Image 1 (cartoon, rainbow, N blue to C red):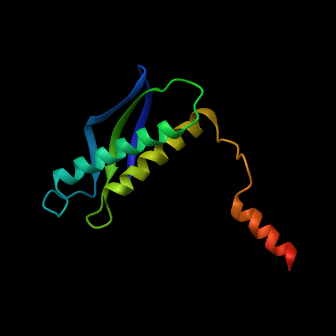
Image 2 (spheres, rainbow, N blue to C red):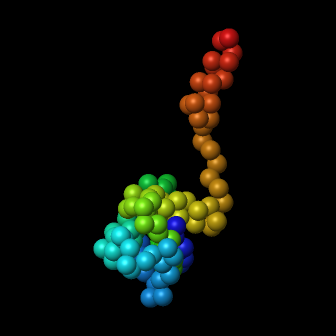
Length: 120
């Protein structure tokens, strides 16, 4: 859906679109217009910012995120999908940089499932 680079930068979050942004699956004559692509980029940026704001980071956020490529589909692409992709991109970048976070608790579903099995 998207290809991005996370780069060290000054304090805060800077979102940039590469001058040579590659957009796969886009037909200028199709139903997706330039306004749709701009909305997808904005949603992707929002997802990045939301995810970083929700992380329990011990350091100050200082990153530039450069959007290098997008893949779109005439029917299936929408802003909410790009917002989710932005959030996932942050999680992936943090996992690459710092390793996967440890799970803090067993999930409630797992605990309930074990409890149900014991009662039978």
